[in-house]
Image 1 (cartoon, rainbow, N blue to C red):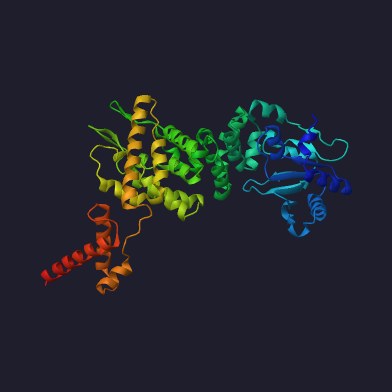
Image 2 (image 1 turned 45 degrees about the vertical axis):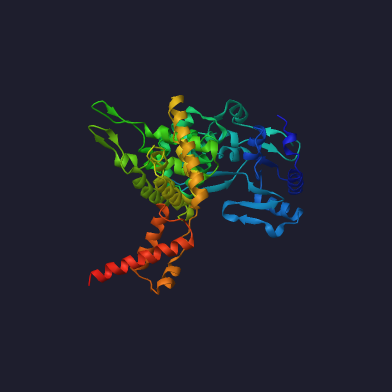
Length: 474
């Protein structure tokens, strides 16, 4: 197949000229070829393989474009990288690889183009286009990758068990490509993942997380998450999410299947937001349920306090997965902890004070919290679904009205701790904390407006009251 139109970019002409000067065959291979054939946005990373020294070709290319100072060489891997305009061009010499049992780092030997294609993870990523010589523009497809693109299939070039045992990260990549491309995993390849799933333990959490983040950012993350569950990867990577699966039934009492419900919630969030950590909040919002599940003879199955328990579990997951422990962690913990609060506020007896407190606790994340809660509606009854959505719409209107009046997002007290100490001539002490908390509660309960003048009046009365209490103790 002639794919000359795929290599019309200037970068390929320069690579071809440099390869001719070195008298080595060169090919573009992998993601660029795949995405061109799928008519997807083309990647900014371009992989070049040559039958010879990839580093020598990279050096010649860097000189040709005047970027020798920007050449990055990875001698241990026999690869080199050169930036070209808005692209990163990576060069490697064709090679064959073998692996030891307990490492993903291969033992590398020089090889042919066929050897190099053999070591690729999937047939759709082993497609190569010749850049120079008589075959320029010709597709090299030894494993039927073109057919697999047409059929929407993820398949390994060689024996899947060997492929995944050699480099277990490829199992996560299979799931990720299935999610991103909406492809199916070939049955034998799927079985290979199931058989070799335990090998994922030798892969660093950082590399696993890179693939998991890409799954979570797919248009329908549930595709990849369900595959992780079905192959056994979920139990090894996120056992807290795996534990959501299943329904217990005792004396006719059963509960909702929380795993597949969670996948629906994640997809619902994905339709409305590209925020990675909001999607994780959706994935983790019910992880406290298996831990808090109890059967009440009168009420049926209960999950009291699962939000707070789940919020504490979130930190352990972040630490284990090497995810950032700053703002992303506090954000996900907050959304999980508050995930049931808005539903409780849709009841007729809801007070403005309760709404103020939620606005205060959620702060700038109140809109994301509402997206999570609205996405948590997975009932298939259209009448019930619309009723829940209408209730949330009314709650949003109440948020707007109270926020307009009381300015509680990113709320800062009208008087700081320093102001209070200066006002009453106090040093840092327990009484300063009591005054600060009293002021906050008075504003959130609607006892006083959120302004400095009212705050000063309130604190003078409160301080006087505390002094009287102290005198009475003497």
